[in-house]
Amino acid sequence: MPDSFPGPFEIETPEGAEGWQEMYNYSSMFSPGRREEEESMFWFQDGVHWPNVLTPWDATFFEFGIASLSQYNTRHLQVPPANGIAFRILNGYGYLTPIPADPATIEERVANFTERAGHYFMNWNDLYDNWMVKIRDLVGELEALNFDPLPEIEDVDEVVKSGSGLGTGYKLLDSYHRLVSMCLKLWNYHFEFLNLGYAAYLDFFMFCKTAFPNIPDQAIAKMVAGVDVDLFRPDDELKRLARKAVESGVAEAFAAGDVEATCQILKGSSEGQAWIASFEESAEPWFNFSTGSGFYHHDKIWIENVEVPFEFIRNYIDKVQAGEDLNRPVEAIRAERDRVVAEYTELLGSPEDKEAFEGKLGLARVVFPYVENHNFYVEHWSHSVIWRKMRGLGETFVKEGFWAEADDIFYLKRTEVEDALWDYYNSWATPETPAGPGYWPPIIEKRKSICEALSKWKPTPALGTPPEVITEPFTVMLWGITSESVNSWLGGGDAAEGELRGMAASPGVVEGVARVIFSPDQIGEIQDGEILVAPLTAPSWAPIFGKIQATVTDTGGMMSHAAIVCREYGLPAVTGTGFATTNLTTGQRIRVDGTNGTVTVLD
Image 1 (cartoon, rainbow, N blue to C red):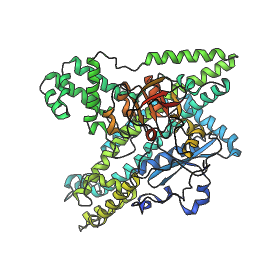
Image 2: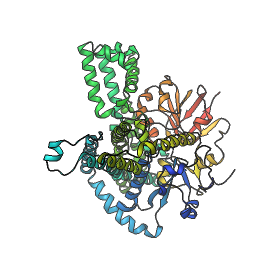
Image 3: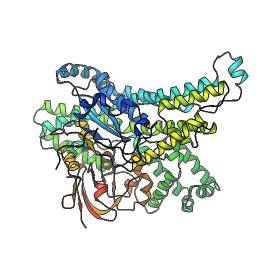
Image 4: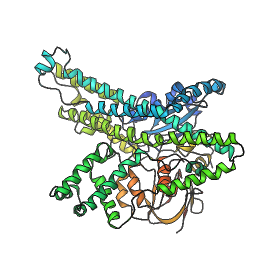
């Protein structure tokens, strides 16, 4: 078995994808000028957040996100052992590597981190309340952006007689500059609390590992379970609407099959009209929810594709009518949480240890909800608005003949959109024929072809020589990358005697039929009682957790979304298997042991 992966400069360009480098910022790619440094690092493909090919504009969130994470580690908080995370794009896929801090600076960093993080921990609730105001204000600013086509002549009162001295052309360019600026602000906000949330959990985690050397990772995770987070709110709204449909006597309308037919029936009665009004109340903001990670423009968003929430509601209606309980088993999970806490508290010898244990656990519980909550406000709600605004701008370019479809704008880099806007503005001001209609269509078509070729390439899971032992805690807890998983990758992922190993992410053992899916579009295929096998899961998949028995994913660690949600729903889960979707097939009977992190093929 090899002991290393190919180096980043050994990877060949897939056939048909020649020139892919033109789609991305030069600094986001591996480059000859820093080859020696890049080849000395171990990189992994981030399948948890960016499992698919990045179109040029979509790469904006990859770049803004990881850079913002890094600045908080390195420049804001000075997390003692960790600088930021370096990122690169190779053949259209995102690769990451954590950058450790210089050991000689640790002592100084500890002092800085204690002061800076301590301020947040001591004032968490007030600062978090302020964060909620900031994020909602930012969404409001994004919603207010206007990308309408430029007028034939400026409004006499608004532009001329007002003395503003600024026309709609300036405002159009300024609106795009502001959108890009607000994207970066959004990602700065994202990491204002997230690294601290992980740090508090990690501090509690490490204390437990020291105090209880044999404690399973799951037992530690159980002690912060039973949280009430906004990320579950969209699913809760679906359940509320299903109950309302049954209670108000309009449930039969959902048997019509499609949204339009259902709505026509609902509009025919006052109860149905009330239900529609109730749906609209839930939709803003809770259905600004992507069917994927929220990082790709092509992921469906509930509020724009209402057939998605309607289908979930129809399934919930069936369960309500069958007398099933739709609620998550919160009380049972909290009872188990309290039992585990009491069990380990008894093992502590001194009052000082018990006080430290209670303090660290208390802080972890206070900050932990943010670890999931931010996901709705940033990756889903805010990103949904940004994708809509970008489509609006894309539609304006369509009207001016620059390209054929609104979504073609996502095949331009963010700086190229600025170039196209300048072309549009300048040709409007003169007026003359813009260069864009003759310039952009062949570039867009070429890039679509490149992206299609790249999507057929299976990205190498890692690059370079892995360390002897992977200990970087976020890499292990969030991405599920361990020495064991890396060895599995090096071995090609062959399941030993019908068994896969991964992270023991949520406890329990079940046997059932596998349902392997690769995208949100396949969710409708899942049948009651099956075991979900997927590359990863998204928050908006929550409604299917009431149908399945367990979850198995290719990517993700103990703190990945799939792991956290399965624990909150009381479902066994094995994450970070690497090759579950390759080695398992729909219809196979499998055993999922979420307590020990194994998946066994039974037939």
